[in-house]
Length: 133
Image (cartoon, rainbow, N blue to C red; front, side, top):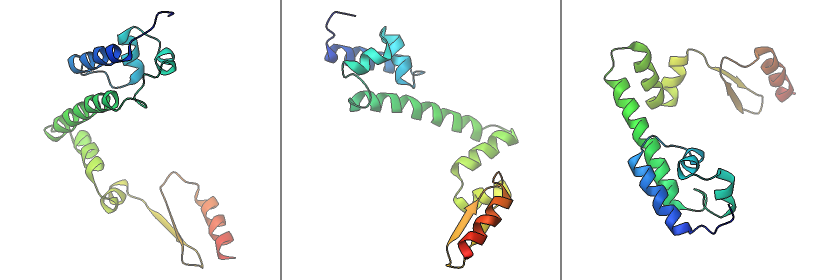
């Protein structure tokens, strides 16, 4: 790619693509759609990190699909999808209750450690002993 690319033209083309194809959520997919290698676009200074308009358009596509999925889950009679939606919108206490397990260790200094069920309990007990010393 030896020819000079006009960043402004590239931005206009990218925004047009993002508005017409709302299934593009990642910069690498946009780069492919534009016909360029992602690294090349980064090298010439064209990336969501350096272009708020581009970042906003990609984020909008993500938000729209998330909103659509949440609406489908809300209107669905499937208990699994409803539980997934509930977990997304639950506060910390509700989420802990849904997951069914919370282990809280308190050291001698009063500090606490909360962990989920996939943590090695024996390691935590040894950690608590070390804290209490």
